[in-house]
Image 1 (spheres, rainbow over the protein chains, first blue to last red):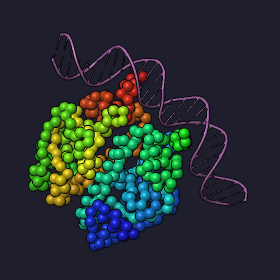
Image 2 (image 1 turned 90 degrees about the vertical axis):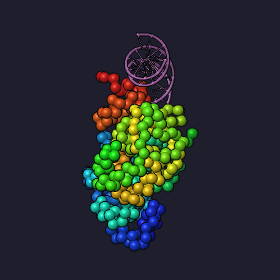
Image 3 (image 1 turned 135 degrees about the vertical axis):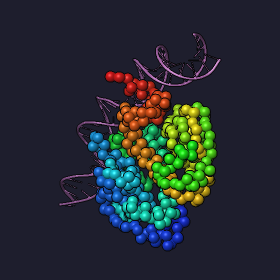
Image 4 (image 1 turned 120 degrees about the vertical axis):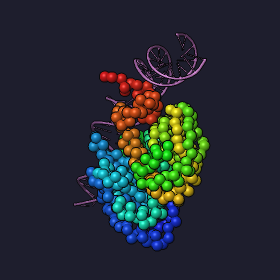
Length: 189
Length: 189
DNA sequence: TTAATTTCTTAAGATATCTTAACTTCTAAT
DNA sequence: ATTAGAAGTTAAGATATCTTAAGAAATTAA
């Protein structure tokens, strides 16, 4: 566990074992069963979760009562509801385990204490946040205004693992395509 | 100029005058005429720009040769092409002044030197980046899958200043609506 | 002020995508 | 193994939005 975190963090900034020990000592571990919620709508998102193993989705319910999936996250990704976690305001979204998922997690308060004790961690999160912004900008700038078929092809190409592990109707929701139409698009010929 | 930057940065982290002097000493100032480019497609985005006064847009050209606007930015916003600036890779997008625009700007290298000399600045940018991420997630999560009319109404409500200053066809592009259809939507009754 | 360019509007026909609803296939639980 | 629920497919009709094309209005330049 500690080693997985170390390998991950060292991709951004080099941390000594002592520093990793400090960070790790502040993290708690938990396993969520399939379909269990890490966060529910209207609750403040208290934690930032580092996924050791598993698969989760984030979604909200629109005016028509439909689930709209906004992200998937797997091993070695941080997942939280950024807005709710940063501002400590109620979340509009849910975070739910699609597979059994084991995480390390920490509160905003704990994270801020760590930033002060270990400025390198703040640098790591600055870089991680920049990367998340870049990924999200790709989604909003280009991805969402492609045609449905292009979005699906792009997703299959870039995230083939997810196609295996995530039900098709969830992929449709993430791609903002109705499940029926995605089914149509997948038809050969 | 220095004062405007100070007021802005102090919204995130408190900086002493000495620290502001250090930061300010590394920034250059420049004025772009209306329609001048801060960044052109295929070039590496060398700078992060802090807009003192003015209005710019970022856009790319799609396969059909149409301009797709991805953001507007005004006074007291940082603007750059995040992906190109962070990774120092060629940009797909342009950044262009819509009105005459005066900026302070600095290179990635300079910014990294400043992060080391003044860790508070790294904290400020960590927070600024978090806020940009939150704003962008709102766009990709909710905004882009609203109906065209809702997107327009939302934009009018949240950014009324832009309606005055930005030609309607540019707003249409940002909202991912054809200019003709936006014109239709705006018709009374 | 007039001409030139840019921006905005209107309308008709085309198309992508959604909705509904029924049916099939798959999966998980008894 | 059987059944109940979940997930995926199919097809017809509805609708949002785009495309094209032309003209009107507004800005900018001469």
